[in-house]
Length: 448
Ligand code: NDP
Ligand code: 2IT
Image 1 (cartoon, protein in one colour):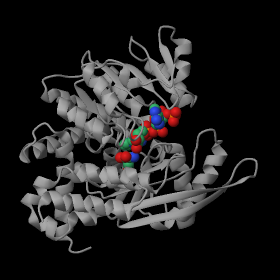
Image 2 (cartoon, protein in one colour; image 1 turned 120 degrees about the horizontal axis):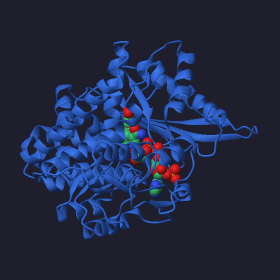
Image 3 (cartoon, rainbow, N blue to C red; image 1 turned 180 degrees about the vertical axis):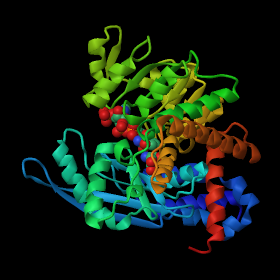
Image 4 (cartoon, rainbow, N blue to C red; image 1 turned 60 degrees about the vertical axis):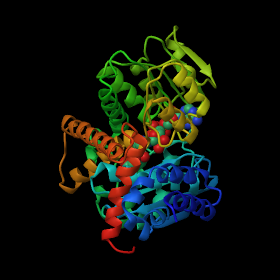
């Protein structure tokens, strides 16, 4: 069978075996679409059915999460942990709490995580988890009860050498703290290395909270560097206004001299032609947990558009940092027409396949999430190292390492793209670099 037919058959098999999970199908097609030259060069990968094996998670855990709200009403949510591959180390990946979470979302995120963690080369495997619990509007005690119930089941599946959860959308240090507390109580073990994203004063890494956003800015500074360019004086768009978005904005504006003129949330878009005022944003989002529409209340020249589309605003660099499939083909066409030259995915799979093709065809430097947003899990890996050594690292030391890791990831993607005949194509570079490392490990470890 020729390689193209083999790849198509694999994709069709994944669709047939995982009905009703379009995000997972999309993530598989996006990776496998880059692999033809690798499979041609390595017939042993085809023979050992490495791609087919990697498309089937090691283990899929689904469970009931019952909890009571402050009024005493009982709720039943669904919990997930997809342990995708431990070929390179313990399963590692975040937990997402959002009403949209279902099996297909967790599987796509887990699949992406395998390759992301592989490119990083820090000895961790890939997994992901979460729940359809919506933390918005819930009190601290409700969130705590939910987290305790979630952990009452999940605790038996995780451990510092087994599976190490962290945060993702909707899960931050508060939730990690509640989950760690319950884990410690049930197991009677103070195993800080079982979770990353902890608060700094009890084992957390000082840069973990900032890491994904900072890392994305570091990666894109490298991308721009290959074009003899930088963020200096660039006009940027950053979608979302959560953990990833806020720290990407901070790094671009405060260290790299770029200007971020707009961000968003699921309600709308705020545009400030002078560059977003970070302190205001942090106050609204991180301290008050409120909506970005409030930004325009204190900044008269800024404009808030309810339900607006951020990608219509002219920019040089666009960073989608909100959620999957938030940037579609039409949006890509608008960005290209307006002169955007680089796109870096802070979120996981925020660009649809059609949008990605439009960028690649137009020569826009497009950096996929599994490379550009690896800073979060990179600092998680550093947090695991710090915990294993019972050490406490400084912000500067950790941030320097993050910067170095992002440079190395960029270099690996660039080299793989070049080696396999598509120089400058970070999508192919990331998929190929991530896949080949796991594939070699799977061959070495026998038929598992
Ligand atoms: P947060 O929950 O902190 O923030 C998510 C932000 O995106 C919120 O501002 C949310 O707005 C906004 N948002 C959600 N849906 C939409 C939408 N359809 N349109 C516009 N804005 C929207 O999540 P994170 O910042 O942690 O995560 C964002 C993305 O980055 C996710 O894809 C995540 O998987 C990825 N990521 C996160 C990492 C991490 O360490 N946290 C690491 C690597 C990747 P609202 O408040 O209205 O819902
Ligand atoms: O998508 C991601 O890389 C994360 N949510 C971070 C995972 C982690 O284990 O830090």
